[in-house]
Length: 334
Image (tube, rainbow, N blue to C red):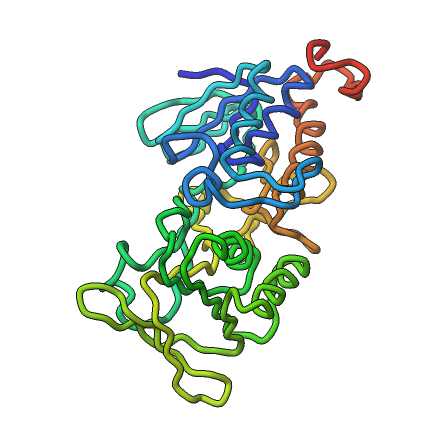
């Protein structure tokens, strides 16, 4: 039995920042995550991925960001249940909750914050023949160690930020690199797209837009990727590794049975404080949905800050919330 003020489901960057914002208001947090270590997708899937949109850091790797965040929240002494999925939620007569984990952990809390986590996601797979034949040695849905591809011929498929960021990063590591996208425009950052076009002009990478993937081919090892261009003509590219970066598909699991308003596999929230339709339950980060939603870590940080301000009334119903600036008071004053 664990007693805390806020139970945060998901120990990714947004969940970790929620600990910081709650800590400033003297609210204790316990985090539960299906992964065996904190960091969520950044730790498990993208540890070496360069991130460019964190204020104050022109570029920072995913693993370094998580390391910094863990150091940032250390003064607030959060506790963790890692390697454990949430299975059940029980509302108490007082309005508080008991969160039940798959290993039998019972977390008593005043507020529940759903911050996603890798346990709620799985990679979106492309429609390519023979994927399973070459997975996991030559087909990849994430990049854990960029140097695994040093000197190799690699093909990356995708048109979002992850595909473009890894293409830009691996351009100096791979022997040959090709980026394939089914559309003629990218969905991700214009700056990242500009870098892609610059690399193509310099002959550092091959860019194939408006191409449709067809099949993978080879003997014991992967040798080529077959596709068709915008004229439906066949095109083949030699490759040692194929990296499909189409993002992750959320799977709510038991959370879907909690009576929350849903849109597809996302949780609808009120942007005033990112509360759900169920009292004392909030959803922040990629797992939530609202008009104008952007799936950025930066936006999740904003959501965590407003959530903490709202959650205060449940943890301290008899106290008046007084907003303070950390620049004036410093962390030790909170």
